[in-house]
Length: 112
Length: 115
View 1 (cartoon, chains in turn brown, purple):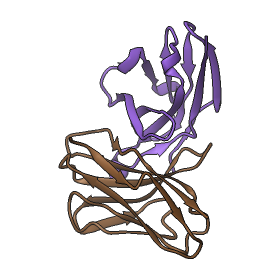
View 2 (cartoon, chains in turn green, orange):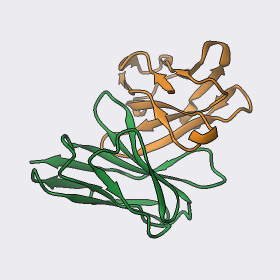
View 3 (cartoon, helix red, strand yellow):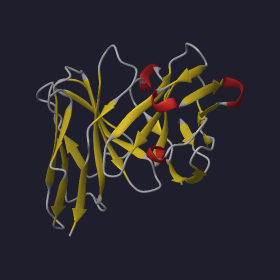
View 4 (cartoon, each protein chain N blue to C red):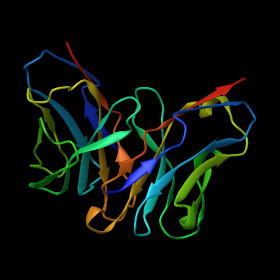
């Protein structure tokens, strides 16, 4: 089954904890992206990576960290420094020959 | 900085009526433009895209959009709404150049379809 897999689908975090959201793809796409979605605000770019072992901050990187050790994987860590982490997180990929991004099914993170 | 404005956070139509979702963008260069659809608690699915070819773009599920550079608009239409069209729709722009691949999204429009 090809595509982008985000896990878990739902995640609960206690205040002060770090949590890591998984994004795996088997599309052989070079670029990967993390977006945050809040009601009425659209999607905002957190981090992106165009190539393995390299990544750049997006518009709202504070309180988040990423790694890109493998082409297939781009995990996002939500740290305790993120003041308002409750949101829907979407991972996306794009191949060199594509103009559009392809999205995973998302992870809904809730702070309890 | 680029921006995308979707006029109307909620649009309600009757089944069989015309669907019109508005999108305006700000970009100094010819952009790539996209419309995505999102069903509850799911990811985004591409409806259609403009990539500097034909200005009238046809997408999936009977949707189409027209790129109007003079108006900086990329409105989404469908002649006859179906109940299954009820979802949230996002317009997005990729300005290309050094920003290539980074999407700027509008705030979304929730489409409701009444029987």
